[in-house]
Each structure stands twice: as C-alpha cells, then as structure tokens.
Length: 128
Image 1 (cartoon, helix red, strand yellow):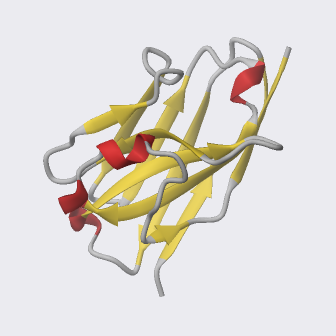
Image 2 (tube, rainbow, N blue to C red; image 1 turned 90 degrees about the horizontal axis):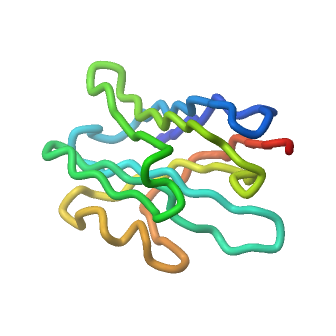
C-alpha cells in the first residue's frame, strides 16, 4: 500500500517556525514529485510547495516564497517543509501529495491540485 505520513504540525505563535515531514512508502520515491498543500476552513485546497526528483526542481506559492523551504532526503524517503516567519494566515490543515515527476511541478499551483496519492493532514495553527 502507498502511504504518505505527514507530521510536524502544531500550535505556534506568529513569527515562529515549524518543520513538516512527509514519509513516503509503497512507491518508487525517486520517480515522484512530492508536494505540500494546505486547506484552511471554508477555503479550497491550495499548493504550497513541490519538489521533483531527480532534478530537484522546486515550486513555491507566492505566499511561501522567502519563508518556506522544501527539501528531500532520498535515503529516508522523506520530504520536509521548513516554515519560518509563520503568520495566522498560514493556519490550515497541511497535506503532502505525490505525483509522477514527468509532470513537473507547475501543476502544484493549479486550482484543485490533482495528485496520484494523498497523505493524511497535519494541523498547523498560528496564533497572533
């Protein structure tokens, strides 16, 4: 079975940092773009950042640029999202998703992003 196990969410004050992790199993990790997406209450799911393999092409949403950094450890089948300078607008349920790398990363920014596999969400709450 394919599993994407997201973790690392929590409650943090504005200006703080969190690091999310997504551990992937059941697929050939090197063949997939792994991305982070989020969904706030009463809002659509949106792309935050994606990272392809093996070229490590990274995509960031405008809100993530300069504050968030995506990385991957191919030895651990894990993708990380380091989130700094968090603000209350970042409060959401964060999901990781996987899609074959042949599709690149630009699709991450499309409305209603379509992936092949979703993980469960991890809640990020930023207090003001």
